[in-house]
Length: 145
Image (cartoon, one colour):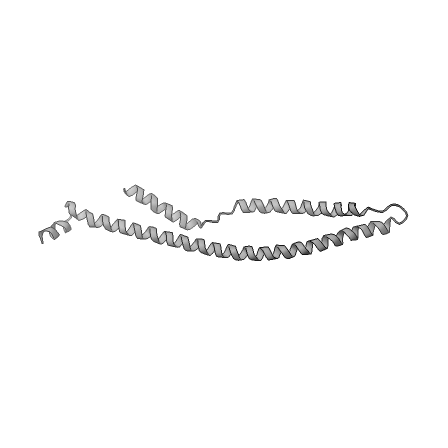
């Protein structure tokens, strides 16, 4: 009974142990909860990213097929237009029509590629809020020890 009285009396050396132990237990629980939240957020982001990539892949595949057909159509349209306009003189060779349309698509494609790359470089895949909270907890622990 005297031991219990000594541990609960303020100002005695034994009264700090349960307090420190409680603080450490609470910190450990807080860090576990933050890590769990971080894992859940990463899983959700990964799931959303996977769905977006699948949709993007199918969309890109279909767009490429469509673009190839439209490109061929533009080449032959250009060849037909210059061939019928220049019936009295030499028309535009077919390879020049392919070069014109291919160069146009390559230039636009390169511009879009670099725009997308710049946007992707600014993207941060990690959840900022959870990472910041975890950093704050670690800093708080360092300051207390």
